[in-house]
Image 1: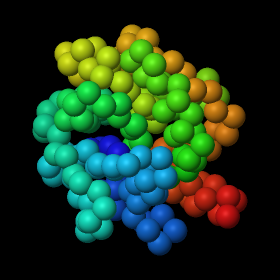
Image 2: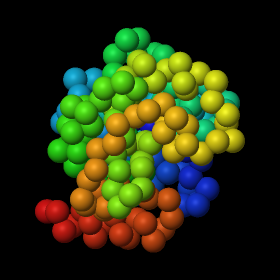
Image 3: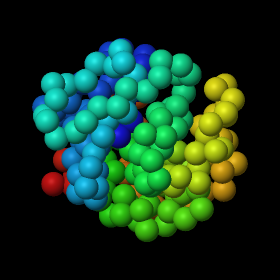
Length: 183
């Protein structure tokens, strides 16, 4: 799980922003626990996280570059030769079925979720074959461009709300409504 973002647009430490009474980061962690034997939070050293629950380790990624794929690269390097299922801390609505579909589709460099024609590089399963292409990417490049150059597969998902990223206060409201509609 990636939690290295600065949270500038949401005006706070994104991982601990409250959504329906819980820190935002707890939603993707819970989703990943349904699919993975081990859940790890990858974050910059200065990232504010909720108090540890004892169930997830934290891997501190290098301070630079500040790019979403820096966390993916760090996870792949640290995980050794294992695939890495990636989910950003600001994606509270990703269902277990989508995560399982990504794991099943991860061949070559990996598989990335896509809904409404939009690719989400931080909802993906990357294989060790992605690491060489992530070692020296241009830190000014768009994450989507970098991962598309890796030749990842796409997992198309009908429900666009599944890939909702909470980046602003209005996204929190939308995520709250999406979560309520699923209960």
